[in-house]
Image 1 (tube, rainbow, N blue to C red):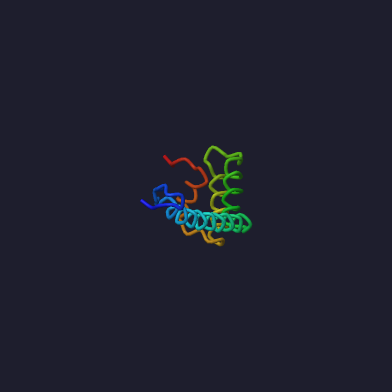
Image 2 (cartoon, rainbow, N blue to C red):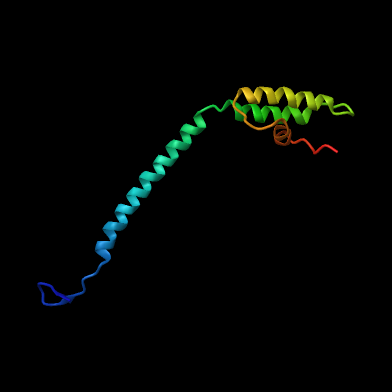
Length: 106
């Protein structure tokens, strides 16, 4: 215990020491959160052509008035698959059709 000027004893505490460490950690966390937020904003600002194509192709695939044999959807999937490959899609046609929402063939 430490003595003060008026003769009373006071208790030394580690809270003051922890407070500084806590404040430093809080500042580092705040800076990290700002970095993450700025990266997210940059990612949102970037235009991903493959993601846009997937979105449009899925909507188009769902809205096709298909024939009994399913040829229109098959042609739509094949055309959009070729475009997706040009944009960087690395999967197969079957994977692309699953991504578009096609049902399994019987």
